[in-house]
Length: 105
Ligand SMILES: [Zn+2]
Image (cartoon, rainbow, N blue to C red; front, side):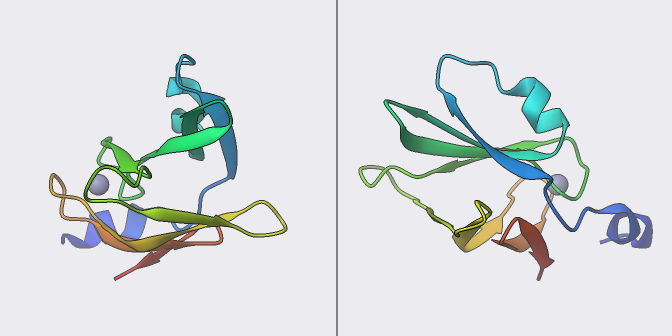
């Protein structure tokens, strides 16, 4: 990875929002929020702008019936941790999300 990319990548998300699948999450993604998209209060996708600033929107599947699947844990403060790690196939970013923070691999 080029040095300028490493220098400018983000190390945290500003918050978490839960939205219904029918809502357009673009504005939230642009603000660097982690967006839980679901129906009936049950999250199905976690979407966020790639923290390397490549502009890619990453969508992680949270539904048990599809693979690959990620699990999200929300702590008492409302911030979330994601497992396993996130590996972007488009930009090569590889990182963990723990308590809304990006931990680069
Ligand atoms: Zn990226």
